[in-house]
Length: 112
Image (cartoon, rainbow, N blue to C red):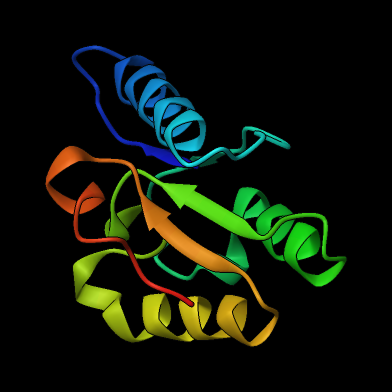
């Protein structure tokens, strides 16, 4: 899951997020079910098509872990309450959230 916001090198953040996500999945013995891109700009995840796909996969128990590059890919820091709402919703559906960006990767992410 990547919220693309770069204007100088479009696609670079998405490429890095996917590479990091795949590396984390391999490290943890996880299979990548789907790669989802989400446009940057709308702070409420429930108003974004990409995030609604993540919710759909969680609701149908098609995934056990959601990997995002960093927390702001779920919702920006100014809308951290929306991020916490979504992480809690995923956890309530038995889905863990893991961050693929190296400084956050070692902290284990959020979730069960």
